[in-house]
Amino acid sequence: MGCNPGSERRLSSGTLFRLARANRREEEHMKHGRLKRKACVLASWAVILALASVLCAQNTGQQPSTAQQDILDLQNARDYFTKGQLDDAKKICDRLATKSGPVATDALDLLNQIQVRRASEQVVNQVEEDARHGECQQAAALLQGIHQRDPSHPGLSIIDDAVQRCKSAAPVAAPTPPALQQGITLFNNGEYEKALRSFKSQRSANPPLLQLQEWIDKATRALEAERRETPAKPAAVARPKSQEKDRASQEAVLADAIHEFYAGNLPHAEQELEQYVAEPGTHQALAYFYQGAIACTNYFLAGAKDDQQESQARDFFSKARQADGGFTPPGDFVSPKIMKVYQETAAGS
Image (tube, rainbow, N blue to C red; front, side, top):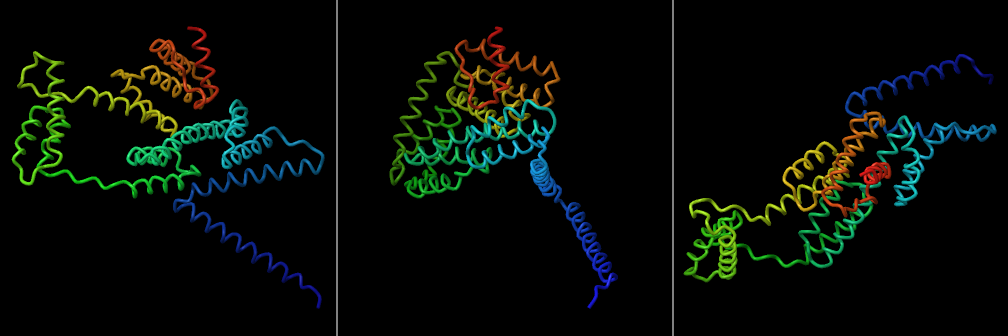
């Protein structure tokens, strides 16, 4: 039988109709919250097109354009990052970050991910060590931080299991007797005299409270230490919380600020650092350094055009040097561009 030209045209029309219908469905999907997925697909297609362009150029004896090569290099950096070859990924991103356009922005984003991953590696080692030594609560707290900052970390499932085994093996702590709870609450609030009276009132409890004498001794020592520090303080004035507790709380603010920096939440990190330096802690220089790192990051993300942001970063770096002349910055965990600004500032001070 001969071919019927009309059937070929009908077949082509049907194909076009199906393609148009598929396009309409895609538009409906995008309207229902799939813009992010579409963006990822488009980004993947951009890489595929760049690869195709390079192959075509090679087949025709031509060299790929600089933009095409940059896209390929960025994809190679992502592949290295996925495989855990962070040094190789960082070398590529350091070069691409100096360029202009979207490739530079994506390279900076990947550099931040590399910094977070390296910081996570150190925390992972600490989690594993804590779990081996039965420090389950501390291990679980550190693990939660990794989940928040670096949810794609390839070792999460392993350390999740390690922490879970630690919790399963840990002996179950005896519940606090209700008769002691009021005194413990007063003690934790720094009201040692009231706590001591509450504990002593339970001496006649039947059966005897196993932890009672331990708490009486704790409250007695805390009350004596407080009286030595403030001998002239009126008894009617409420007792403050211990200075050690305040310092620990202040250092927790700094630790959270650094975690937020590596998680990319710069406004929150900046706010917590301002809170920390307003009430100086024991790591004032480190706080100033990360304030400078945030200002530097904003400066480079904006195209390195805002002289005021650069000046602000240098001011913070100078304050870090003034706060501690022997301060050593965490150079392995921040961008080389940030470290360059810090080193230039230190050399000029």
